[in-house]
Length: 403
Figure 1 (cartoon, rainbow, N blue to C red):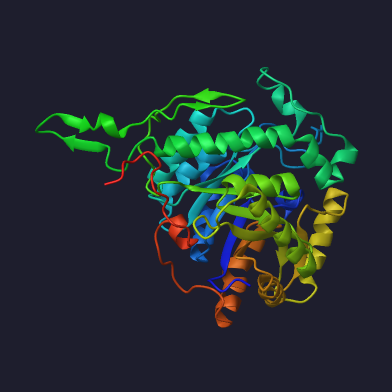
Figure 2: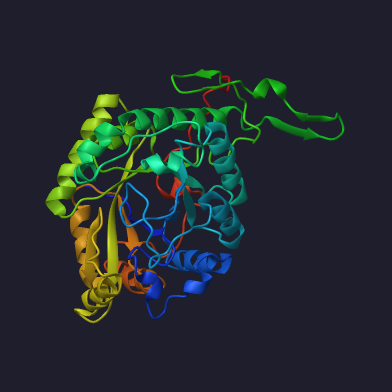
């Protein structure tokens, strides 16, 4: 059972997680690709003292099916680059963590490392990232350098079958995370001297080649960007099955899991623990924070949230379901669920608002006060870095000499 502070994050996605959310009465469909839209959402999340926000990203247009493109024009299509968006929002916020999704199948790890290190400098130690493999074969055609497996309808119905088909991509992603972490360490914390009198800007002995040689690529280093303020920005991953659990156990600081009830939460956490044991991770030295994902539709009046979701379903022509539990109810009912599930050992929750701004403000202005009344959530931000807020230690630089 988790005894520390309850952690809350939100996953932001265009107009919300329901595909018809852009047609909600309070949605501003014309602003979805504007910086102002995202600034309003993130500042609202910070108003609620949430730990961090995540930003979705992809290498292809969204589709109704997760494994193949479609030609639908009645749902949101298109997005902004998640890392660039987070970098824009860094100076507009002061406390909340910013965690963009980054594809690692078709993106060079050197570029990933530099981009996330830069984000951590921009937001002064509040950066994280979510490595994501490119599971759609069509995404590879944008680059022309390789192919990836084409998943079938049968595959996507079975998370374990998907994980088995995509295991080579997860192995490659594990190397990407390792290379990225090494590049962050390739500058020691005091490598910059900046002594104008002597003309010494940098201590060359404190920059290091990482000389990584793997099955998928080799990277010499060092990075072009000084070590991030956090040393290691937070690495988060979404996991549904054994292979992704192992991927999280090897290289993540936070794992998002998707149980559908309390019993399922216990079972999933047991599988995560098994993966941690398999890879030999010492969670006392390297904690792995476990968050459960839920899609939420919230209204104060009982039954109103379910009715609102039903109206969105009618607009979309299908009943909305998700890889995570879809919750419809009041903030008090959601607080009951979160505090109940928390007893299974979860550290926190990543909530996916069904429609924004409605469900985001319901989280920040209804759910958060309810949790505070139950003394289950903070009343002020404490430590400034995202690692510190999550209770993660600052990693020692692997290349620094012992003194």
